[in-house]
Length: 168
Image 1 (tube, one colour):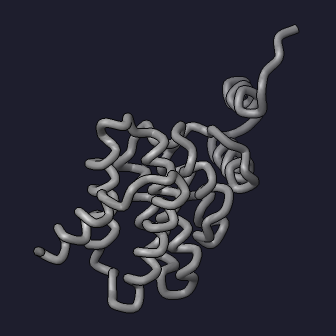
Image 2 (cartoon, rainbow, N blue to C red):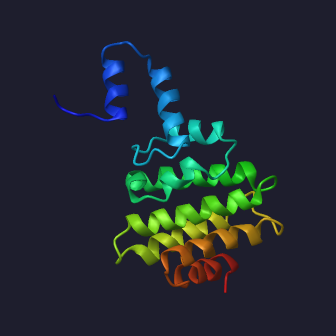
């Protein structure tokens, strides 16, 4: 008898109509929230799970740190920045953690020749959000710098982003 995993079981239940799509999403979001890794990225699913976690950087954030989540990098970045926007004032440490996992995940998912450019773009995107303020900037920079340390990368992309956003 062939073996199959939990996600295959959820898919089979939907095919057999023993589970509705909303039930499947809720179950899959619970798996994601509880660090079940390598669930294919879906903005709806990951956003649903992150909202259920109060936008704290937990299971969903851990999944974003993995390269498999980055098939649609722009959608992942939008989700991360939405998460940061939701909690930057109330939970700045979690906001920093979201940026750390985004930097780490994008670094892991990008070919070395494209890393500097992609990480610079991520940094610029984070630093130029309309909700960025003098009080939130230290937390944004901490998140990006922690990502750099996590992957033992150089700070060139962040430095380039800072230069680009300050006009120097």
